[in-house]
Length: 325
Image 1 (cartoon, rainbow, N blue to C red):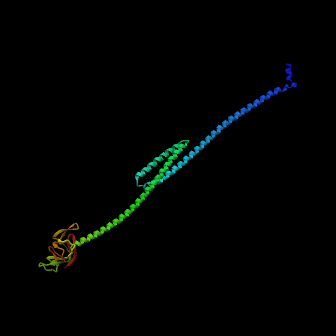
Image 2: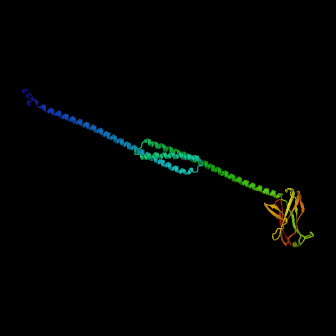
Image 3: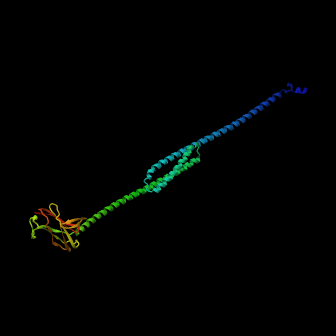
């Protein structure tokens, strides 16, 4: 024991034992502190990394959502532009003649437009949008654009056909007008020719006279003393006049406008006219001279202008006035 004590005395160098144990404890504390710091730093790094990753993911999500919003807005602008173009061509389609094409185009376009409106409204009501939904809307608008392009092409095609038809119709109308003018001119000429031919068939009368006669059948100078009125004329040759019996009707009108009646009625231009006297002659195509028709006076006659008319075959052969004293 004593020797042990001696060894631990300062003289024997035993004074270093106590400080060595303190150094170990200090080192241990440092090591533990460093370990705690490292662990803390690791934990902080993990937490910081997790937070940064989350923030990065959130930033990426926000960016993607903003891009989707911008894409939706761009699609909305495209859709509005298409609608405006469609409205412009709504007026053009009114000119389309083919109603079935017009109805089919309109139905297809309206169906696609309603589908886009539905998708667009669904996206507006969603806080977050997916790329798939945006792509679906984009595809629908692309379909609508193709439909509008087809719509416009059909309108242009039909309008071109309409223009061609209008041009053709105008040409046909002009041709019809020219043909109508030719037909009218031909009809007029035929009517003139027919009238000339008809007139050519009419009996001709020349040398028409009226003579008052006394009771002895001699010429009477004063008409008021006349017992008969004699109308004389000649029928010249006319190769165009059909041959056969010709009923000639005489009408004598007094200065006062009174018809000297007594003869049978006859047809003229769709009306029935009374006559003064009638005579039937046989016409053989040769001249007949000295034809006379007599009328017995049965009323008082006065001097003045008397009108003498002859009718046959629905023609007025002659009409002439004579002054009788």
